[in-house]
Amino acid sequence: MKFAILTFPGSNCDRDIYNAIKNELGQDAEYVRQSSRDPNALDPFDVIIIPGGSSYGDALRPGCIAATSNIINALYKANQDGKPILGICNGFQILTEAKLLPGVLLKNPSMKYICKTTQIKITTNNSAFTNQYKTGQIVNYPIAHAKGNYYCSQEILQELKDNNQILFTYEGNSNPNGSIANIAGITNKAGNILGMMPHPERAMNMLMGNTHGLGLFKSILHTLQYGRNNK
Image (cartoon, rainbow, N blue to C red):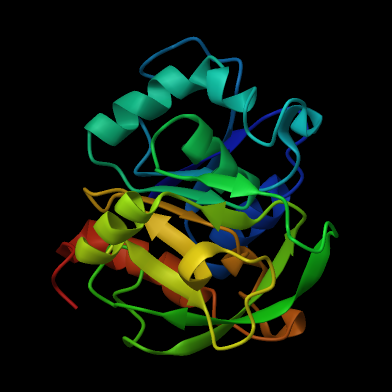
């Protein structure tokens, strides 16, 4: 399988993703710059990943300018084609700004940058991104953000719950950023786009502390090979 890693001025987790895909997952990966005007630029790829960082220095608000980049047209096409799209941290922010996912990411109530390993609950394994986990499983993912406070209207929140779009929640009292309903990651209604604040790519090797992130990427591969509902 071939993974596209979208990069923007200010991306700083692209190498983490590249190493995770190449060295830990054993798959092909390639950087794709935000400047590409080709609407078919992502056609050769099976999976698209938007890494974390501070795209365009978080000017205006995180992900806002990146969501207007040339490559976004190709991202819209990849979504129409049903390809798995994963946005991590700033990638999640970009997906909401591009209206590919509902809601917004606000400042942490503490007004501080938070960087630590956090307990995350897998709310369902019936998805393209979690089929290699168990429903209710607790995993340890690092977080690193100042604006990870997910917020949406009560109407949208109910839709997310009704459609099983909430895949990850902060476990128990570990919610570090005040996100509504403890949300750590959501999908679109079609289930092919995931936005999440935690960094699974930083939990891929025991040298990093644990390998809990492998399940997410293996879930994507499993979905591509066997389909979403075949566990």
